[in-house]
Length: 130
Image 1: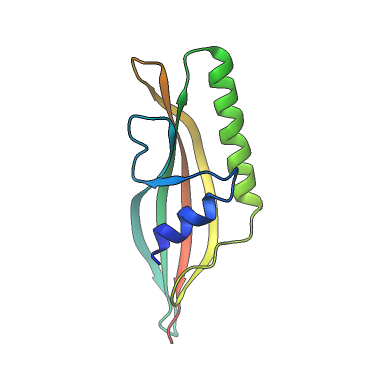
Image 2 (image 1 turned 45 degrees about the horizontal axis):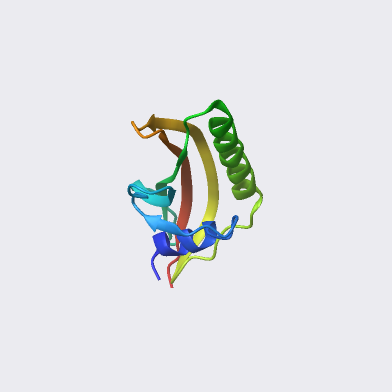
């Protein structure tokens, strides 16, 4: 299983969500999209450290003020839940070192009143030398 799929499965534990890859499409829903990664360092033993960035998308009705307030409550609750969880177990020799969330915000409202929200997730990963 890939790191992305492992993270999708981990996130789906919140409220039993089905997490799609990259974008939720035209319907309301949830998706996780990789948004870049980089090697941050290598230690004396040869272990490599990476920073993987992801965007968690939420697509929900955002026509009325109450809808938008409920969506923001969901994002705030999700980010708090994610910050309180033990780190996910990653495949192979990868080990999650740290996970942070930021930028819980409304990105766009479509003509049909559907809002696209996002939460940025940053995962610091250690690839251990065997």
